Structure formats: structure tokens, C-alpha cells
Length: 248
Image (cartoon, rainbow, N blue to C red; front, side, top):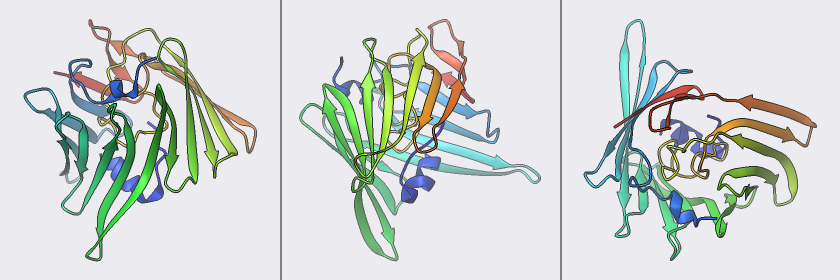
């Protein structure tokens, strides 16, 4: 999983991922409940998920350990909701959290990062979200970076184009998919801090990515990544892309 976030959020992102975009707000009636993600690249790192009785995500517990001698550590992230059952706050610790603002259709329009620095509360907006029936653009911070999204007729994210300071082209990603249901559709807060992992199509697409082809305009260079999966009897994948999934 490759992340693109502001430098100030990189540490917290590690710890902690045509329909209207309301469809990607967590709804466990539409998606399977994930019990644990285990990372094969980092054999000593796993995320476990705890849910409320009504199916809403309650906590994400990230566990890690080192050998010789074996030492364990654990970090817990908590989720808070409004009356419409949309996540409004992700609490990382006593001194840091993220807030989310929604429009009348239930689409996230803004995410704000809050933390304490030398005893002083600080708040800044790290992402703005724009829609044309579905999510079409994310602006990062003061507009230094912008990402444009285009979709195919099957409801999958087809291309992501990254720009610097408005119109300077950086790269474009082309994505191909399988025909199996995506277990993360509707679970945008599973992987990261809910600010949308910009290198990940899981929150946006109905199917699972098989191939990424990324063209970097500045140096005319292309990178390609291919993925394969092991599926369970319900068609949801259990192994692939450097980690394994256990469901409830």
C-alpha cells in the first residue's frame, strides 16, 4: 500500500485504510466486517478492528512487535459519529484527532487535523473534496497538490491524475480490475486516517485492482504493479497485495 499524504500526517497515517459518494461512507450492511489485516511485508504488524453492535466501526488496534527480546506495542484509534452515523472524529490520542465535515448528501467535503504543539491547540485543513455525482477531485492543503479522478462504466476508478500547484502535471495512474466484489468499498477508514489514501482505489471501486500503470511526466518513466488474489467462498479476497484479511 503506497500512501500520499502531507509530511505532517505521515506518521499518523502509518499508525492507523454512477453512485453518489455517500456510498463510501461506512455501512457494514453493504460490506463484510473485517476482523484483522496482517501485513506480509511487515510480519510484525497487524491491525484489528472492533465494531459496535450495530455494525459501525468502533476502534482500530494496531499491534506491532520486535524480536530478541520480544517486545509488543499497541496503538488504538477510536471513531466517533454524528446522528446520521457518519464518522465525524478519528481520535489518535489525547492530543491529536481528525474532524470531517459533510454536505447535505453525506459526502465528505473537508478534513481537518487537530493536535497540540507545546501546549498550543493547532488546527489546519489538510484536504478538500469535490464531487460531480461522485468524488472527482481532492485538493491537499492550500492547493499545493490536486488529484483528479475518472471512473469507468462499472463503477471502478479508472485513472488518477496528480498535479502540483494547480496545473503542473506530475503523474497519472491507469488501473485494471478483476470481476470480484471489493471488500473495502464503504470502509474508507479501514486503512488510514480517513483522509483517503490517494494511492489506493479500495474506497472508490466496486472491484479489486489487478494492475497499476503509473506514468511520471517529469522524467517520462512508467512503473507497473500487478496483483493476484486468493478468494473465499463469498468472492471476497483473503490474500493479496502484501497482506491477508480475516473476516467476522
